[in-house]
Length: 313
Image (cartoon, one colour):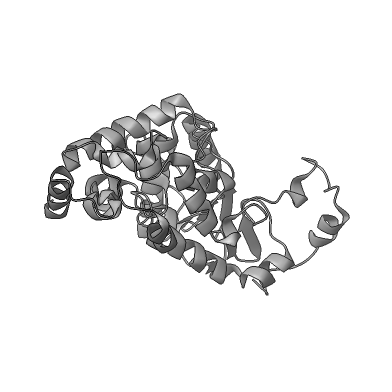
């Protein structure tokens, strides 16, 4: 890996430039990147004939419930093993609606299963699409207070230790200032999972006449953010390019200290985050689900439930 070797050499000889220059961690683990790659899918998909749409909600690192949901949906062959899952959905469109992360201890295993099925679905005429949830957004910013210890151990074992070995140093950890560096290196904008996985996840999408989103969407959302396509393009660009973040983050300080503390790093990412991923965005609003399992209390939300957004999205 010539780029990584040269980067490490510069660090060892005390040449302190931008962290992304001497620790190109986003491309340091190509085999892992391949394993978590999902196909790109369009923002709008037509449903013709008997083609089905299946939506699956929050996963939160729970492998057993994820597999049960996929079995019930008819897209995971119940006879297939955990090590060799098989897509059984034919041309079904399956949409996972966000929040694979946090509150569970098998996040990476869940992503591995979902990515595998998504690639199989594409090859067999089906579609497996993924939406961003508010917990993915929190992890972008290094907000890990909902992450479970066993899940963090998986990130350290599969990603942290592998980066140490691939780069020949553990100094890549310093910019994360002790805030779960393996997890943050994987999930931050421009990180290890940016290209294969996170940038291909959507804020919202339309399948047939169904608009799918993690939290909720309103007509003002569509106007303010420029529609679904604009939201998805903006999100993808930010996750992939990370330009605003790279311009603001300072270079390493001499003496081997982090060039920025974890809270400041999180603040930089938060300030650059597109509004379509922020606190009042479709990832976060709960107008339609408060209170749960009944008509929304908010009278505006009650009216919005009867509106058709698919032709303006």
